[in-house]
Image (tube, rainbow, N blue to C red; front, side):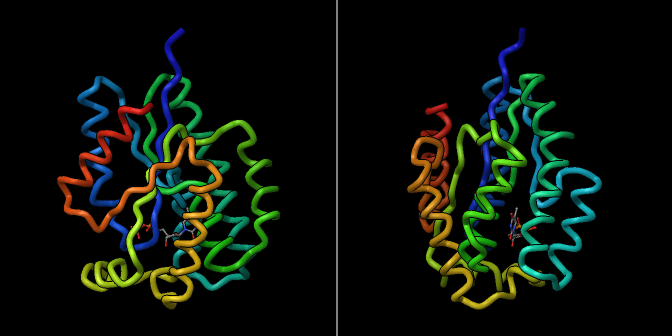
Length: 203
Ligand code: TYD
């Protein structure tokens, strides 16, 4: 039987710089001979991408938002993540469940116990092998965002929301130190690359 693949997730507040490094990590893994599947949340499937449109642009109750995140995730796991891991591919997902704990739990202050119930329901046996958390102070993230594009529903939130979201991420990292690597994303790109290489060498 082929060895099962590995599951790597990229996390961080908007503007933390994770998108800059996705391609670098994918190339490193491909150079190591792995077949790499790149995907993202919310999204990753045709249905998930429709839900993403709603999630990023429609106003809704905060529990509806959390439920739709997990609904899109259920589909994503069934259609993309699990089949790829079974084939022995390496999956890189731009965000996963830690984002729900950070944004809906931290940022929007939704009860963490409810999110844990959903996590247990939707993926009781699946967790990333490695989670790369790109961490920067809020002001840095803000400057990077304002420079690049038209902002979506989340990106238009106030500083307080992002401070709480960042705290939410750091709490998850403290809770699961085995799989999290917190990357200081204020450092120059070559230094971040080095940190990423070290993190990948650990799995
Ligand atoms: P993002 O991943 O930053 O994509 P882009 O780089 O195209 O903007 O956008 C997704 C947004 O969705 C981001 O603001 C965080 C938010 N989000 C949640 O609030 N909860 C979640 O569970 C996930 C996966 C994302």
